Image (cartoon, rainbow, N blue to C red; front, side, top):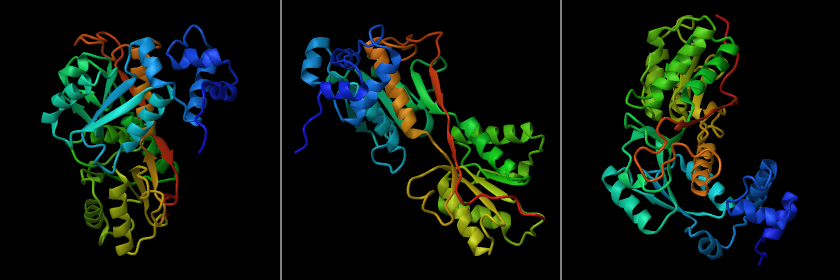
Length: 360
């Protein structure tokens, strides 16, 4: 059986003293340990799967060292679980554990779920959603430090800090990639109008065209849906029986499943990807984008990074380190007049489904 890592092991790997490890993992690093050393200590603790003795810490700090995470359907859905994974990475590296509850998208259960977590004496709360969306903040989240991940407060004056992907820059970067390959006729399958992310990605698409001084044609933007069959039907309608001179040379999709459908339609019509048609996805969905034939160029949603950033913000507020503005401290006015948003950039992943625009 492998020996459990100790604080001394962490100190040796990080190149610091044992006392420095104790200060950082007990939440007293700021002002006592250099920022670079703190980062090395937390990384070493993560790599060694080390966490301080929870009972000793809770007795010393009068904290439970437990963070409650409420999700709409992240646990039961195949999507966005990496948000919780990233949050748990940070929590473990700082001596906390996470307890996750899932309402399976039944918002009527939100309040009781939060109360259940509060009854367990959690030190803080995080709300996580599948897909970017506004939510009604359960009142119980205002009683302890709390943060939102992949969602935001729909109250006119936002009460809690939220961490979300930068969807406008994601749409812009995806479009810029195709423009740099010489494409000038780019169709956009933009999801559904009721999705908060869809208009933001459309804005990025428009911004990239404007920056390149290339006009946007409204008839090239489609609210096509999210699923494989929607991508297939949309592409068949757009491409079937259309001459090469009149069809787009690239199609941007609001998610990877739409892109799969477009790829199937291209195969049905005898079009080469990317020779005749470049296809761009969004999400970088595991075991879809990277295993497609051809493999899919896509925008990677920074799910794990969102979880890590949200948990870092929350733990900094709990431990009184860093900027905790807008995280919530038990009153609805917490964070008033302060920054309550962190936007995490998406990342372009270039694979085989995009290439130079064909000559016409």
